[in-house]
Length: 233
Image (cartoon, rainbow, N blue to C red; front, side, top):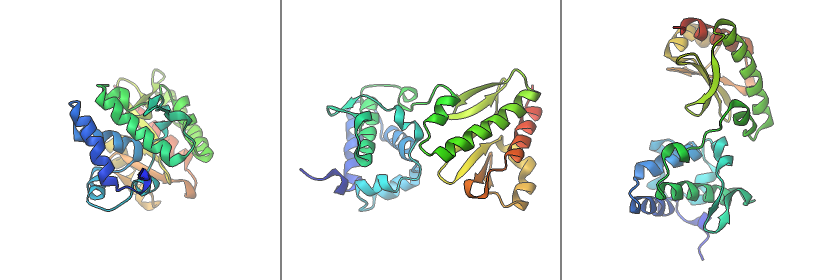
């Protein structure tokens, strides 16, 4: 029997797509669950399909394995996914399970697991230092928002911890190298000059605070307060 790790990613992925399409699901949906699990972008997946990259290498070089993958449970091919000890094979079976759920007709909302609350979201992070960063960032954002919007609620939206008051005010989410803060396009525009001066990367709606520089919690507090003050209805 061939070692699945040495097989070409393209060959294995084609089989996953065929499995989903036989049950009336689309290649685009397979792409979506794969991107959710691994962090690859659509262009990267297209390039990988044209390459000789092995399946093992595909998972080893994944940009950002989703922390919520720990919520993927149950049997696939007779194996209990959450009990698999080998990291590579656990990743293989997690993707198998997601595609199997597509084939069985589950909705995308059911398949793309999201923790019910921020506590669970934080505890699912594998890196203890990232968990600590999230706890501190959560505290300063929550305090800043509630001081201005006492009725604001904290929830998971778009797969991220979010503060909401009739609409989303601000989100946060970790990556391997930075904490992402999402104050929306207007929030980024408000602080663009300062972010540039202080050397922080940002894009439309998102700011990156690298862990190695130390997280500027007071700056995050200021951004959160601005979002609460300027997005109230």
